[in-house]
Image (cartoon, rainbow, N blue to C red; front, side, top):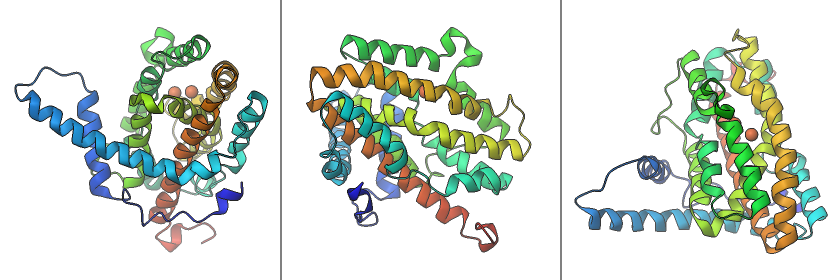
Length: 305
Ligand SMILES: [Fe+2]
Ligand SMILES: [Fe+2]
C-alpha cells in the first residue's frame, strides 16, 4: 500500500509514446495472425529480433516500476492469496472515479469513445490464456483450460466472449483502430501480449490474467449500468453483464486452482505473479487517467458540472 502513493513518473517513461505503442500493436497483430512462410525470411527474423528487443525493454521498464511493491507480497500460500485479493481495494487504478461517472452521467458519445478505446486495447483474453497455459503444472493448466472453455462459450458460438464484444462494437457503431487508440490502452494490450508470449514472464502472465478476473466485475457492472441508461437492451450489453458476474467465479477459481498450488510448489512464483498483477494494474490505471482527461476535457461533461 505504501508504494501505491509513491510518485511514478508516467510522462518520463520511454514507452509513453503513441509511435512505439502503435508499432508494438501492429507487430503483435501481424505476428499472432495465422500466416504463410515468407520469401525474405532472413529479413523477417531480423525485424522480429528488433521488435522482441523493444518489447523486452518495455516489459522490463514496467517491471522495474512495480518491483518494490511486489517484493512486499508474501511468498507463502495464504499470505499471498490474501495480499492478492487486497489488490481489489488497494491496487493501482482501483476505485477510479471514471466508472461511477460512466454508470451515471456519461452520454452515448462518451460511452462509445470509452468502449472504442477499451475494445482496441483488448488483447483477446482467450488467446492470452491459451498462450499462458503452455507447460503449466496440472492444476493451473486445468483451471486455465476451464476458463478458456468459458471464453469459448463452452462450445456454443453465441456464447463466445470475443464475438460478443465485437457485436457490442457493432451496436455502438464503433470501429476500433490502432491509430485511433490512446497509447495507454495500446500499452495495456501490448504488455498483456508480451507477458503471455514470453515464457520468462509466464508466472507474470498468470498473475496479470488473475488480477483482471479479480478487478473486472466491479467495473463491468458500472459500464453495464451506463449502457442500460442509454437504452441498450439486455442482449446488447450482455458482454458487460456477463463479466460482472462470471468473473467473480473465475477469480475465486483462479485463486484456488492456479495461485495456491503454484505458490505451494515454488514460492518464487508468488513474487513473479505479484509483479505481473501490478504491471497490469499500472497499465489500467494509466488508461483510466487518460480516459478521464479526454472525456472530462469539456467542463460541462465533468462530474458535478
Ligand atoms: Fe471473458
Ligand atoms: Fe473471466
